[in-house]
Amino acid sequence: MAKKFMYLNRKAPYGTVYALESLEVVLIGAAFDQDVSLAFVGDGVYQLTKGQKTDDIGQKNFSPTYSALGDYDVNKIYVEKESLEERGLSLDDLQHLVWEDEDEDWAEKDSIRLVSRAELADVLAEQDITLSF
Amino acid sequence: MKFSIQVNEGPYQHQASDTAYQFTKAALAAGHEIFRVFFYHDGVNNATRLAVPPQDDRNVSAQWSELAKENDLDMVVCIAAAQRRGIMDADEAKRQGLDADNIADGFRISGLGQLIEAGIESDRLLVFGA
Image: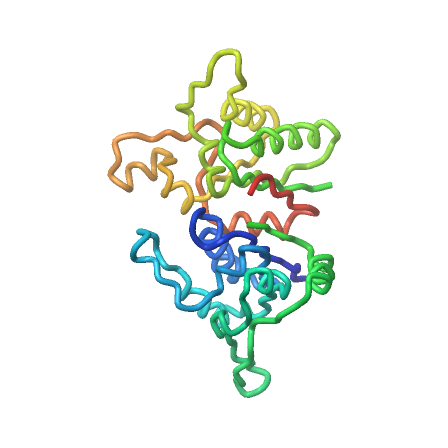
C-alpha cells in the first residue's frame, strides 16, 4: 500500500541548496508510486514565484522544473495562505501549475491548493512520511 | 521498531550529525532496528575519511564508521549530493577521471531512491538537520 509522502519546503529558492535538492528528491521519488504531496510555507513560498531571473547571481534557475511536476503525477501542492500574505504575495505571483486528470478525459486542473495554516496542520498530521527542506 | 535516519548537515558546523549518531546508537541499544542511514545535502560530508579533528574532539566520520561496523549498518550517501561536494568512492573517482577518492569505511554511494525506499520500508523516518 502506498504511503503518504509530504515534502515540506520552508526555505527561499536561492541562498541555500535545500530547495533545489528537495526538488531532486521529489522527481526521483515520483517513480515509486507513492501518494505524494508538496507544501510550501514560510520563505518556501518564494520557490513557486513566477518570473525568476538568476543570471546576475550565478545560480541555476530551476524554477521551470515545478511546471513539470504535473507530468510526474505530483499534483497536490499546498501553499500556506498566511505565508504568502506575510510576504505581500498572492496566488497571482506564483506559477500556474497544472496537471491533466486522466479520469476526466485529461482535463487540465490546478495543482496548487491554497490552504490556511490550520488546514495545512491537518494535512501534515495525515502524512506517513514528512521530509522537510 | 524499524527506523531510518536522514542526516542533512555536515559534521562540526551543525550538531545534526552528532544528534543523529546518538539517536541511532541509543535506538540500537534499545533493541530497535535501523533499516538505513541516508546522508543528503551537506550531510554527505560526514562520509569523508580525510577529516582530522583535534585530538580532544570527537571524529564524527569515524564514529559513524565504527557504529556501522559494530552493527552492520547500511549507510548510504546520495550520489548527486556527493558528486557536487567531492565525496567519491574508488569506482566513482575512476569513472570521473579523478586522482583520488575519500569515502570512509562503512559508507556506500547510491541514489535518492534509497531514501524513498527507506521511507517505505521503515516504521519511522527521522530527519536530522535543515
